[in-house]
Length: 350
Image 1 (cartoon, rainbow, N blue to C red):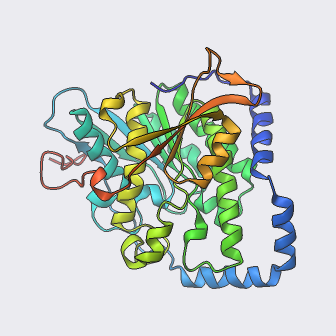
Image 2: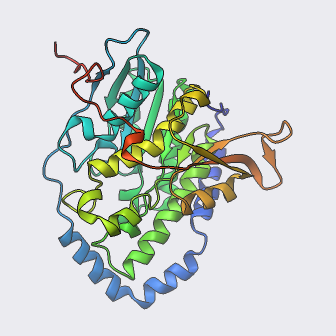
């Protein structure tokens, strides 16, 4: 099961948020100088990127329902929270959304039904997690998957604010007995319509936020998986295949790769055991949490979780954390749902 962490008083939570913000701000002096020096260029590029990337047209397909409904046992309830990536914007079939992919994979690995509820909202930023969490808690979830951060970068949400709301979400879910897995901020520097030097800054901002999210989530008792530039190399080689028509959101294959990275961590979070972890893992060792967060932000597909060293959960540099990386990413690692027993029974329908 996940690591339980006691809820800190409000004052200490604010102090923690400020410390995380300082972590996220490492090196921002150089970033600020670069931004001032090329301010006009960056503003022009930002306007061009907004014109190039189409606005949302239609909501992503709904994926709520019971997956593996014919399997025995009590259904495990999973909720998906966050932004357009969590919602599966950019695909047209229910089975291609990350929620459906994860629910299908969980059901098959655990041999039990999985009830999925998706509360993610297209365009959401971290402050928008609160109403999603409140709605999700009504269903007494066993595990929550949160994908958030990209819109915080594009909207320049202050890192301290973004992290604070994410921490509040994780703490509220953990207090209700729900395990939490967070896919940290993706690397927006991998998005083709964003050109240098704005691309370089977008990459820096994305990694800084991802590292801050990792520290905050693990401290709050959750697990993280860095999505980073998971799709970057494939996007350069096969842009029409790995990204959706808008060149900003993942395609069906892109979402399958992200789900393949997330599924083993979700299995670990719910205590499913190593025997149910798909793919080959590589344990990267133990680091202090800040060091682990920085390393994970640079290496997509890295899981970070709290651990103990010689019976202690903290060392001189802070909480101990274990890094684990997927040795293989591929569509086959997470089965696509089809017209089988894994096809979800939609809520409210016969």
